[in-house]
Image 1: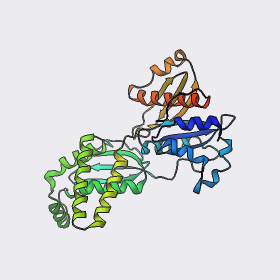
Image 2 (image 1 turned 90 degrees about the vertical axis):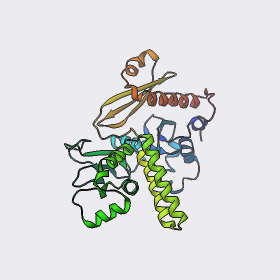
Image 3 (image 1 turned 45 degrees about the vertical axis):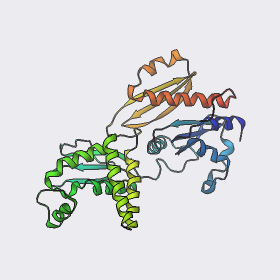
Image 4 (image 1 turned 30 degrees about the horizontal axis):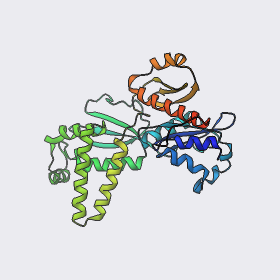
Length: 322
């Protein structure tokens, strides 16, 4: 590994994010994602395992860039958005393998419940013309999201609260202690969880953990294992994630640190358009001022990371490994 690359790897955070490699001509040759940026990027100069097709790429790497994300799910979305916009020569798939989905919460008297739906859906919005129906997401990974939806139903069985339901559903609802009078409260709890409200998420996790522990105590180990998988899947859909939203938002965001300006764009609700250039604070001023307040911490954090990487590669960084 070149000394400049080794120095850059050392200052990468042990956090989720997206990385990209540039060649000597500054062309992007590869974009990837990581749950631990430093460890994942360093792995390219070791045993590549099932990534043998990238062996010939490694000697071409001249520069490392990285964007730190709030969660693995956010990193997966950012990678997908970048690859859908432009596919580097060493990437195989534009957008990755995960299937994008959303969750619909229906609080109507006729057909209450949750359902996982594939995207895109024509005319999709949170209201969707019906005050009783809300949509949440988007999420990547249909199988994992269905598992999370099963956990939601286990703890908050909205589907057993319809008016005029069959005798079987009434019996199932009775066994869970719910009926039509609980419909509004269950729907509100589901929406609070899917809106990532911390108190609601913590309460749901505690409820499922208690059910898991009770199943294990009764030696129902298969059920306990299933609930544990549902808990892990719920973490996936409730963790911080802003790289993709259902609303078609537009925004331009920028961060600056030590002479480096980093810019991202949000188009149709998707975070992408990642660029970084050397600029003075004065030159960066207009773009920084135009950055929405809710995105400033993200942009500033990644500008600081970009500046550390450039400084490290130049042999000037004194930042300790975190």
